[in-house]
Amino acid sequence: MIKLAEITHQAFKLSTTEFISLIEETTEFIASEKGQVGELNIEGRLVKLKPSGEAIIVGDLHGDFESLRHIIKTSRFLEKVTQKKKPLLIFLGDYGDRGRYSSETYFLVLKLKQLFPQRIVLMRGNHEGPDDLLAHPHDLPENLQRKFGKEGSVIYSKIRDLFKFLYNGVVVEKQFVMIHGGVPSEASSIDDMKFAQLKHPKERHLEEILWSDPAEDVKGTYSSPRGAGRLFGEDVTKRFLDMLRVKMLIRGHESSHDGFKINHSGRILTLFSRKGPPYFNSSAAYLQLDLSLEPQDIHGLMSHICKF
Figure 1 (cartoon, rainbow, N blue to C red):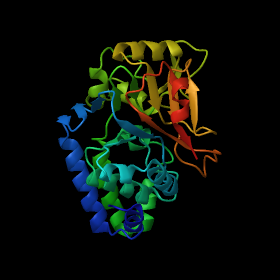
Figure 2: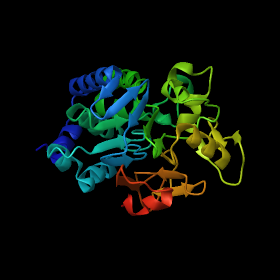
Figure 3: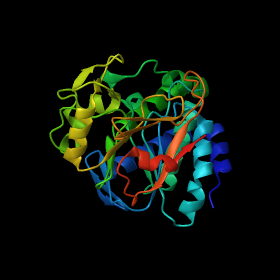
Figure 4: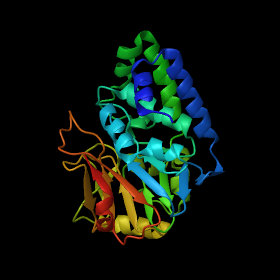
């Protein structure tokens, strides 16, 4: 069985050549994922799933390697996947920036994808956005330079190529949609999610998927204080969920004191899966559940939220 301690050791002893090779291999593999790939039905940059089997859903990590290691350990992902129990590990994006161990966190996530390609889904966060929507501060280049010296710029270029192929969303039939940030408020069909990256920047679907946030007691959308994306009301959420014929939205993107929060009458769950500066939230959280469950709203998932 593959041991987490061994992968952790590799992450901290990583050479430039090994990291570049891993990034290139992962990029090539994700770019080639089309149609039915194991249990994943891939259309454009959207993953569609049947409501069955176990899923472990991870929010923002931002270079917090210890929280990622904790999630893998406590969810028993490696034990289960090597015993052919076939759990899915779904990341909602924002792997690096603002944390000391961004490169190590990227390595562990990509190594898991290399080892178990059909069990790992890597979504795109606003910190993996296109060049015209870079998050600030964006300290990944500096992090890579500290660890790899002048070769850090080569690694950064390779990893930005990878970002283009990360997924815009995941839809679990009749149950959930997963997006990093928020609802693409002007989407008229599921195709606007599947191909948001191709329609950017002419249409703002990708910007809102990566950057938007839910707001209470508002209707429609409003300018966001983030400077990108929109604040969106419960009416926007309901319209989007109805269009996709699902009940709930699971997202990341926002820090939370308790590691999670609920919005829009139990229609939205936000997960924040890292701790420490600069956020200083008291808890982090991830979601671990059987996708065949049929909760009517997020409150029915409370017992499946794993706080730490």
